[in-house]
Image (cartoon, rainbow, N blue to C red):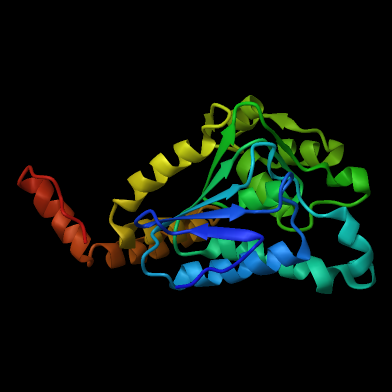
Length: 260
């Protein structure tokens, strides 16, 4: 699988872990070109059998991503939905729907579309010195690429609307307390922390990991009665895998499992 992008760099030198870097410093703005390259990369990663976990990060230490390039707005003003938001939503959906875990390694600030992009990831690791938020209200708009519905699922509706109403940013510690991020790391150590976690996950049974991702995504907001049979269906699938048989046998025989 070849990756030959300029605005999105992919490193697959680490076995089983792909590092995807937004390469538009210093703020890693989501331009139309970057979005197109990221969509292409996500499609290729889905098909790349080498890759089990994806780490999504930004170049430099100033920002993971601070959202859209406002200078491009005149180009899309006559059809913002068709020329920008629809494709941006499809791109962020592709992150969420990727069958493989995606870890956002967020050095520096995470604003606007960068925050929306991160919320489509499975796990978010943030620099202790960074800030995160959705300041779109200050442009007279609201987060149109997933923030409107993803944020409330992570921090609850009351905190979500407060953040979007005011446009105020959270410190890293606040983001951790509210559940918007799952881990903090010292400045300059975010990528290393994310890689350690990615390598740990990459060693786990891959079919079970994929079903966990799919199951959590599809079931967590459904009523329990709707989840019941779908949950059993996921279990039925995972219990038929060779890795499951190996894991059970290794446990019973008190040995280290050798997952395929």
